[in-house]
Amino acid sequence: MNRRALFFAVFLVCAVGLVASTWLANRMQAITEGVEALPPRSFEALTAVFVGTGGSHENHRRGGPAVAVGLGADVVLLDAGRGVAEGLRSARIPVSQPRAVYLTSLLPENNVGLDDLLLTGWLAPRDEPLRVVGPPGTAALVDGILAAHRRGIEAEGEAFGLPAAGATITAVELGAEATYREGELVVRGVPLPGGPAPAAAWRIEAAGRSVVGGGAAWGADALVELARDASLLVHEGFFAESVELAIQAGAVNPERLRRESSWRTPIPEAANRAARARAHNLAFVRLRPPPLFAFQVSRAAGDAYQGEIFVPGDGDEITP
Image (cartoon, rainbow, N blue to C red; front, side):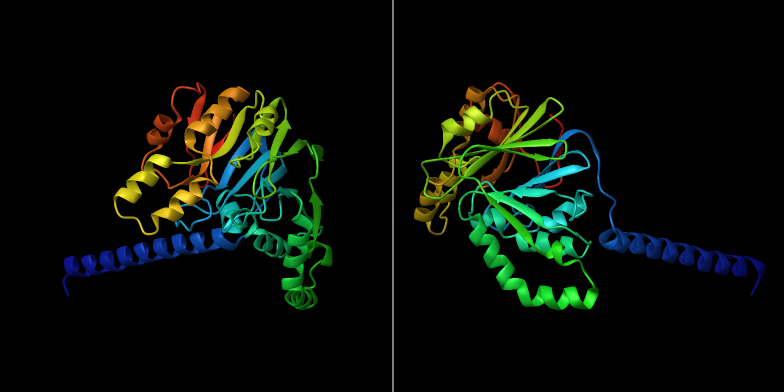
């Protein structure tokens, strides 16, 4: 083999080795990022992190409803829908960091991730009970979750030496307007009356800013009063225009789509609520059906609301 061929062979081997080692390093980094312990995240200003922006229907691009609101190391969650643990990791928030979960209603979409949040956070480990605050019926929901996992909790706790308190939930039911303190965060809740299921809206305040979440189709006056001059209102939105297009395109079970609309807030109505409350910003989540483009939501909202409108995706953050 002449020198030129030998040089080329050595160069080729080195190049292949470099590519392979780079691929392995990147692969190892990706795997490590998925399992490494996260330090508590700290927020310089009151920030809303949209952990999950979907609703009751599965959507591989949007997890179940969950919004983390934080200042400094103090974080609370509005709802805990499916995929909440993975959503928190994607947002670089340890699953054990949220101090409490505030439920806007007991509809399954809002709480099917509670057991995941509880037990995955316990492995972190969380060494104190998870607090869950919600409408009447929250205590029964929590009792059911703990009963369903009791044997598994006992087995893992003994095998891994985990703190027993971290696998429990403290349930608080909101019967009337009430205020709670979570470190630097002040959380005020009001019931939303008049609907087919108990619901609540929550206002999280700190450092002169506020985030309000609720958005059931009922209890509009109570929500508007709570959201007065809020920095950010997070609200659901029913995209009626998409529903009609889906029906015209031959959607399966169009009657069910129309029935569902009575449980949801049309986008123009949500915008009207934001205008009445003089909320500075409005973010739409749980959009059903999801529009193709964000500008469709702004167009559907009409001219009543003059603030900025956001259509966040999972992992997006707003510091209002």
